[in-house]
Length: 260
Image (tube, rainbow, N blue to C red; front, side, top):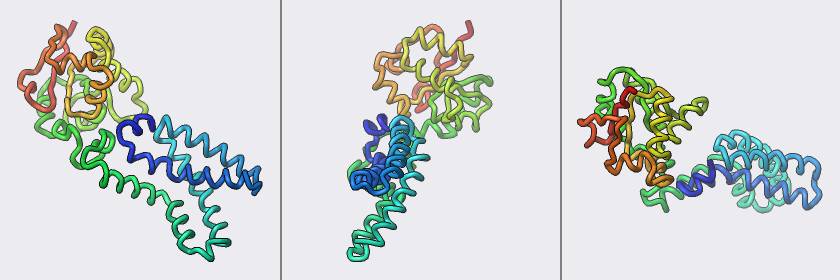
């Protein structure tokens, strides 16, 4: 959500809200001046809804982006037929600000100039030097591959690699229709050890894989320092899981979930 982006990776915000805010400003000016007031009011309401969706779900840009582009196309057309003829710099600037690529480049420039290599986990997770990248390596996944086929409880971003490289199923993964599995993983990590045990057993998981450098794991530790994953990474032991000893010093640490 945009709330999470604002606290973790604020330089992504221009690419999400730049065009919608510019389009809303143009519509507000039209309404104030009484220019096509009914049409402008309707479009303003539609764009406000799409922008509000973006605040809670990034996919809202799939609606706010095209709507903004149509509105700003009209803005550029009006400008080119009026004051834009006398002020070509203003026209070109407006045209550039009406393109999504401009706002994406502004976000990228902000990251490059001001993040200084310390971007938040959302940006880091999309980069070449991804946080926790070593957990995705074939060496890290080799131990999982050697375990009997079962269901692995691991970070959301590790799901595709585990599915591709091992015989296991996964509880969590970056799939929009896997809401139940993703929520189970989150609740287990930030919950108490007893809650984690209940959730992971009910989900039928047989293995637990933790990558301390993964963005998800760091988020969990910030949200619940004394939750299950926090206690586990501090060295706390639990009777219902058994560590795979050879992985305890590796980027990806694995525990077997004991049968009841």
